[in-house]
Image 1 (cartoon, helix red, strand yellow):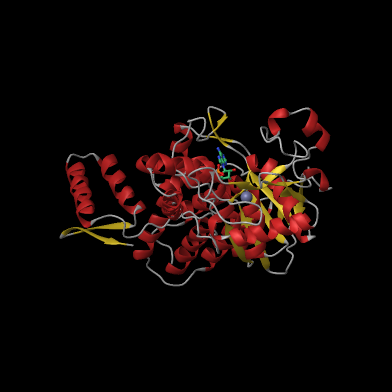
Image 2: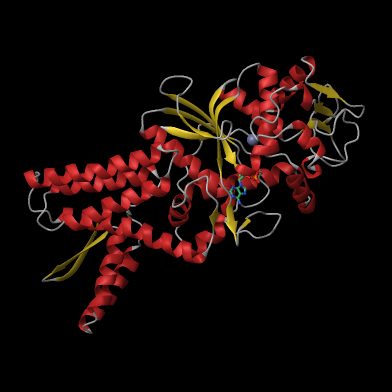
Length: 469
Ligand code: AMP
Ligand code: ZN
């Protein structure tokens, strides 16, 4: 399996630190609002990477944090006249709901910054003791960026270029710094803000320190994969490396993975630009499985432009898989024989070729676009070779293969027990009326729609009977 490593700018063979195990950390959202579909992209793509590694037999320890103390959370809390924790707890709960509907597996651990303050104080202390950090007069603790020799290795930036050329990359307005490149580890509280006691001042942590500390606590000093959106490469991940490697004296993460932006009209979707749709907005129009399919239809490192047309295409693509599985279930109900014929065995051998293609695509830096193309080929194969004369064994194998590959992508393609009885019966009545009016196109459409939701119709002499697959 190869992974593109931002650190080396190359695809590298994945060799875990410990055989059979993967330690993976993904930077999670700042919780002051409902998540938008740009935030959903890393959740979906790295969940898919995790699922694929689990499928290959790795035991994945997957940690993803919630940033629950931050200027924006505090501002919102002040506007509502409540505690910051009321805001963060509310949006953590909402985020978890969205994740569940997108079929993003819960992390092994979801630490929260505010519950890890002791670890942050420890690491900041170590950095001060080792000379990598210093305290300013007002109690702010800064990281001495130039003291860390590897600074810039992830973002491939040179310190002097940073200092001279690009002023916007520097944090300004903090004149107690020894050097404009230094960044905050701990800052004094302002009126009305949440704060913690520390040896330096009553205050709160800077943003970057939380990930270094949570990664160390839940995964250890050295991890296999650290991931997040590409906007995090600089300064967030660069600063995490500086903190962790200086404090622990070990290489922090072996592989650095970054997803490309989800754009709208070729601009990054973001809260600050106001050009966003929340996951909740999208769920009003689409099954969130369609959103997941849309995200995986592009390679995770490519930019992806959101549009209604692409979502419609994703809906069609997703439906194609669901309908095929529904059809296989229908055929299974009526299969005439149990065991596979020699011809069917040969067909299955051919079908295995698509599984190999799927694995090859995923082994190539999680190329989900090609992996989904392989699922489509398998679906087409199933649609061609599965008919009423096939054995139960053959149909079951084919179905299981489609379901298994889809499941690695986190796509739920076997719909069960979703429709209410009344809705099913109403559609059956509509189908009967369409048949009476010789509108067979519409009648077939309804049968397929029901099939795609796992409802099987049977036309009997006593009328139409239905059951759930
Ligand atoms: P934030 O809450 O802004 O810290 O973002 C949480 C995660 O979502 C980070 O990994 C970001 O890089 C990622 N992210 C935010 N906006 C986008 C976007 N438009 N496209 C892709 N990833 C994004
Ligand atoms: Zn982080």
